[in-house]
Image 1 (tube, rainbow, N blue to C red):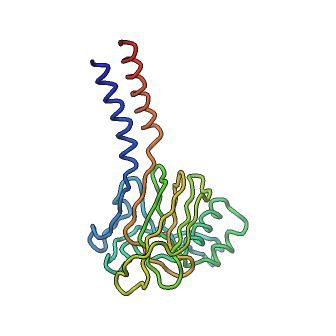
Image 2: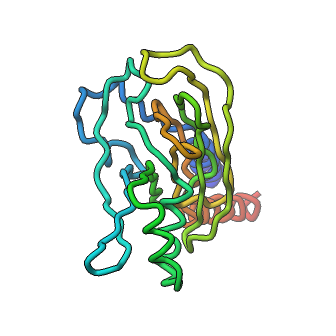
Image 3: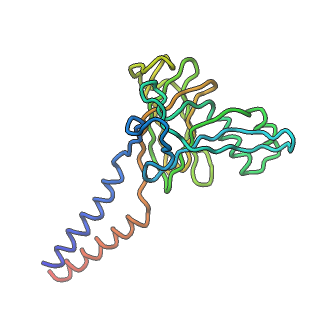
Length: 225
């Protein structure tokens, strides 16, 4: 009977971890006072505002990284407004790869910014409320080696307009395996980001240990029958 007990515990542990990891985690600025630093407010992810900079004296590109503060939820921009994730992520990639044209690229895109999500392990799905006037919302995802694994641009599913800052509101999403970095903003102009959800991929070691416990318990149970 004890072996059967271990078998059941192992099964519950293994499938409990898997099911828990499938539950989306929500970051809702409405749950925080305006001006609260929410960069590290949610498990498994950090939020930053990344802005392209260019030092004209030194002639080198750089990036300004700042925390994210909760804004007014009612204006449809509770997590802030952002410009161009394509330019920002492109500049990041070229700096990391020390490409010869990184200076020109970052100089041309100087002043653009994006919301950057950095996941502890990885994510396979991110969804957010976006607002804009003319330019469509956009997101670009990269793996841990900074290889682009996904990009979405468009208008998404319409939502009721909140406030008067942005005339259009919609629900956007991006998915892909092993998303480590996700940049969110607008195609060219500016887009707001409101409440977002994400699925955190469970650590492989956690599932492996749970699986080993389950298989071990199953083996003991079968031998004693």
